[in-house]
Image (cartoon, rainbow, N blue to C red; front, side):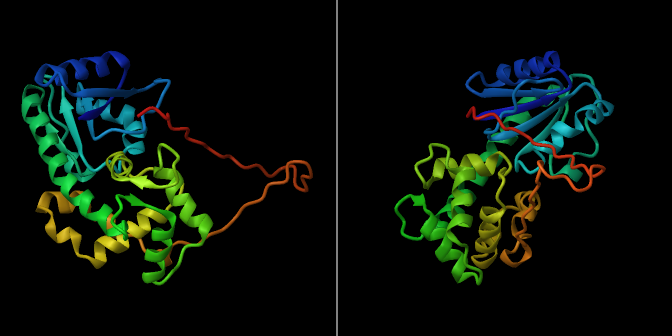
Length: 254
């Protein structure tokens, strides 16, 4: 199991890693902290480590970046108070001396989510060959009332297709979901939402997991409008007009 640790600095991230591996040395730990040079993209659970609840304000941007990861926990340093607002972020808080319970909770949620993800994947894999392909995405979207064009279907693949073979395996699908369904295209999230709602897949989950995954059913194919923006940097009519664009580059490391 791959765990992403978010902490205030590298020393604290290393401290959290040591606590986690002391419970299970077979776990793999990735780390994000202020000033980190890379941003891990794929993981299976998030642990936010803090030495005090107030410290969480310093890493709120890092936490928000991975806010849609379905399995999240706050872990306090031994002796420090737990984070009281964890539930508001669809997460659970643990005291530092409960790291064993934390790891058990992460694994339990990972197992429950595995069954759910597999059902979702199979609902998109129409021909049952073990892969989701662009033709299937277009067919599903047509069934739902708004057919994707070839470019939109390709966008779905690009966000999830790690090995660039123009199809999505279950492994790739699971990595995408567990890492917070990150990507530039909204289409896969929307198709997934429609399928989960239509097949009533949420009914198979426990009450806590339903709460965590509540946003999965919120998107609709008809809610997304497409638009384009063209900037001509060679012919500027209004020199006083500027555009501030922020880009987040995710590390390709798995």
